[in-house]
Image (tube, rainbow, N blue to C red; front, side, top):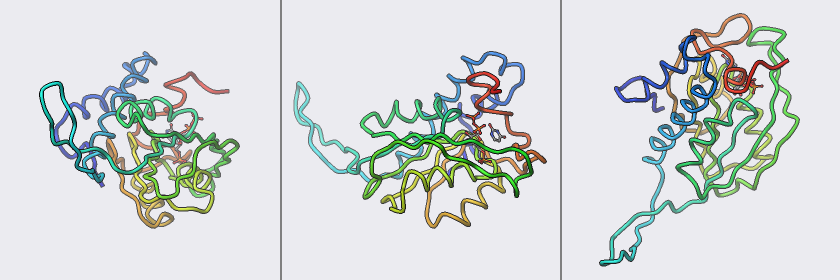
Length: 214
Ligand SMILES: O=P(O)(O)OC[C@H]1O[C@H](OP(=O)(O)OP(=O)(O)O)[C@H](O)[C@@H]1O
Ligand SMILES: O=c1cc[nH]c(=O)[nH]1
């Protein structure tokens, strides 16, 4: 796991703004900060991908270079995931995309929370790197449902999960249900409240980016 909060960088400043109730009043700033964090997480993840050596012709000569050698699919969960996804896509701009519409039925605590996925659209992930960009991993159930909806019983070559804030119980849940993945996260928070929200977290990422849902 790469946890950005364990070392100094501008990412910590961005995460502090994302959490701040005063700064959160500006939804454009919230979306932009989430997009910036997506770029930083994408850059961190890019360090562990495999690259093919190549030679590039510049106007003045040939330069030994390296390019990513595997097809990437970036997936996100509507609607809260859109700004983080955009930040990841800005870096992996040749990737294909997959979208899942997921709804948390928030009548109970983390154990009883269920997730409905109504809409999935995306390419095959077979032999590809699948990046799932989801800003909040609370119970982890939305992410697992999205993964299953996207993969349709197949497995990607590699699974990378990029998230702004993950709860420790959510990470434990994913480790139990997904066999192999790499996690890149802005921060890890210790717990969930009785409505399965991350504490201290930042609140409802979808509402903060796009307005309170009814
Ligand atoms: O780990 P979980 O307990 O499943 O919760 C995490 C989910 O919550 C957020 O979406 P949210 O349901 O708030 O999305 P929305 O506001 O876009 O509907 C986030 O984008 C995750 O997909
Ligand atoms: O803390 C949480 C949990 C789910 N969804 C959010 O946006 N925040």
